[in-house]
Amino acid sequence: MHISQRTLHIPTSPIRKLAPIANRVEKTKKIYHLNIGQPDIPTPESFFKGVASYHPKVVAYGKSQGDAKLLEGIRKYYAEWGMDYAIDDIFVTNGGSEALSFAIMTTCDPGDNVLMFEPFYANYKSFTGAYNVEIQGVPTSPDTGYHLPDQETVESYITDRTRAMLITNPGNPTGVIYTREEMDMLARIALKYDMTLIADEVYREFVYDGEYTSFGMLHELDDNLVLIDSVSKRYSACGARSGCIITKNRDLQQELLKCCQARLSCPNIEQLGAAALYSTPKSYWEEVKKEYTKRRDTIKACLAAMPGVISSDPKGAFYVMVKMPIDDTEKFAKWLLEDFDIDGETVMITPGNGFYASDVNRGQDEARLAYVLNTHDLEKAMHILAEGLKAYPGRK
Ligand SMILES: *Cc1c(COP(=O)(O)O)cnc(C)c1O
Image 1 (cartoon, rainbow, N blue to C red):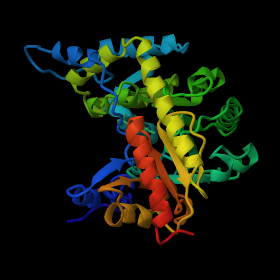
Image 2 (image 1 turned 120 degrees about the horizontal axis):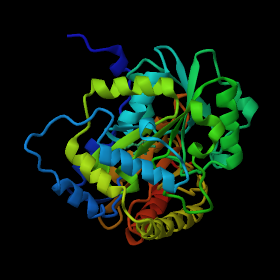
Image 3 (image 1 turned 90 degrees about the horizontal axis):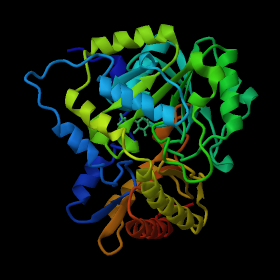
């Protein structure tokens, strides 16, 4: 039987690659998971009330564009952010993941490429690979806190097949929040080359320092902007699989509707849960933010005390990218799991290499850490990491 080259070429997620080792080791050691971005904050009760309200005579297909209540909930949520979207601009998807697939499918043809700033969310390789779309990686450096290079440098990566830029803000895996100047620069480039700017803003609420500007607030971009959104991180509801894709571009809307129609509809039950989530009061984030700010401060302080470790300056989301004085983070991650522990406890980290596309060697001494543990566990985990770094035979 033939298996497509397309899928054969999609790399295994770096986040899941070490899972079989972890599963084995977990029988005898406690592992602090710094490797996955699964939030531990309880999902608001409203979700379960929304889900429980579903009891029709027939479980029929829903509307392809999305449940009316959910669409209205999303519209209102954006209005509160000062972004004026019409119902026609919004399409409900199975998580932000399907929104990303639709964005690539509708803006790029096979052989086209998308600019992404490295390190980027590793799953983007799957969404592009599935459509024979290439990633044009634009490197950013740990030494500049993974901020963007200047306009001329960014433009030097654009080819006549570059159709879109995909940017994550706040960033995964770096936690970086781009400055207004950086955002304006990307907007200028998008307009100059008439490219689509795909803005993945699933971490919009997770901002710990300063103000946050959405790309949706830059009105000059309206016709070239696609927003990717999701309830997964916002309401700690990853398993609800509910996201959306938003654009004011009328031509693109027609194509997005075709994508939605092809998959018929999203699940009715989860949409009712998600609709209820969108009426969560703002005070919910005050608590959540307080907790994550504590965690961010804890991980930052612990990293600053580790000799030879350089990290991004995480201001949002719940990740930090670190460069460590070692030979290879994949080896180090395996070693931490298999050959190291303190009192029967160890940590799991995500090797950095999978977050790059431009060069197979990039990110080899980098790792992504997710701070989705309470501060007590986080301190323990960081202590284990610090001691592991000292004891690791591949230390440079
Ligand atoms: C988690 C995540 C997503 C999408 O997740 P869904 O659960 O499919 O909504 C998209 N982009 C980034 C950067 C993420 O971290």
